[in-house]
Image (cartoon, rainbow, N blue to C red):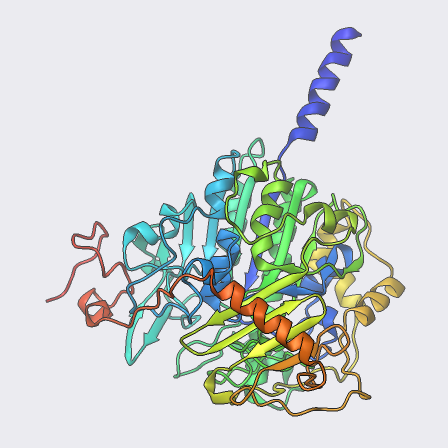
Length: 538
């Protein structure tokens, strides 16, 4: 009996000490209003919604406004102004990347015994081999190095040239040519889950290429039979966007289902997030950030407020809208803490450990967000408590408006959520919320502009603008003239933060990066003697 009790205690202790599997599913350029749980009825996202309603919806969740800065923030726990990643994204032909002096999330997790896998997009530098994912903490990588690809032929067109960008580790994955990228990522993620040794914790990051636009020949691509499901959408581009989104949602469901089938889901944390706001009216993209103002690569809410959810059986109060203020930089300490790590290992990061706040519905430590400071563009934004200041703008103000379809007409079919792969998997280890609860959660997380708030002009080319973001998330009423003391306080705070910024690392494209010199591959063009299995063409 004593032996039995001792064994039980040891097993219970081991189970309590088991580190959770961490799965990050990152969408690219997904709009705030492109998920059903934020009010969109036009394109069903049942698998994503099932996770949201049975987990927590991150309502006051912020990202950076572009791909590279956001990914850098996620990986380092630092604002891009503190890593030199604050100005624009890395083009395939530019010789720079996230500094090698930065230690990244997968490297920290490896020290806790995690097996680490990246499936999909990297976009943090590839001009030298040292910058590649498998030299930055990932055990495996299948996917792209650069900013965007055609979802079928996996080419990237950069400044008038083109090259193939699809890699398995350090080798070009030419055998996958012609296969739809979202399907490739899904199959690879399931393969990783199936092969994983359950005695070790798993970190799997599925970094999708959708919903990013591809090449000018056809910006948005999905299988014809999927696009054909959306004949009721009149706009051709939005119909293609719907096909891409349907495949992304399907992928989420298949990955969640595989986690359950192979016994990993009951000890998993799943984060689903966009990397930045939707790219409405950029590169012929038709994302919807409705009713938020602005788009990708702007500092309006539409560019920096992200659609996201967190799901895990350890969330003590699931099926709720989490109103804690959270920024992308918080994931490094938050997930490390969830994994049982001691966050004292982090030095000079901007992120807060919000794990207990999220799972126990406690107040957030975060009261300030530095959205970005870009002295090249001359744009900056900061939020302190309920006040948001914008100073300067990008694109001469052409994107300082409300864009994209509302996508809120039509019926919302809750039955599709219960019939989804995600709900099927979740239902085997926990209860899905009732229809009434789903309706309530959808209503709570759908932002509606206050019609009683007047639109007060804001011209960022002439003067800073100020908003009470809690009352006015749609950024309609510029209060700069009516709240001069608040305006001045935020300008001083912004100036104080800017003194801590490092110079941007952005480097212009170089001719030697042209894929025509490298067998038409987007590759490590900065290596003096590349060890990759490619031939430099004369």
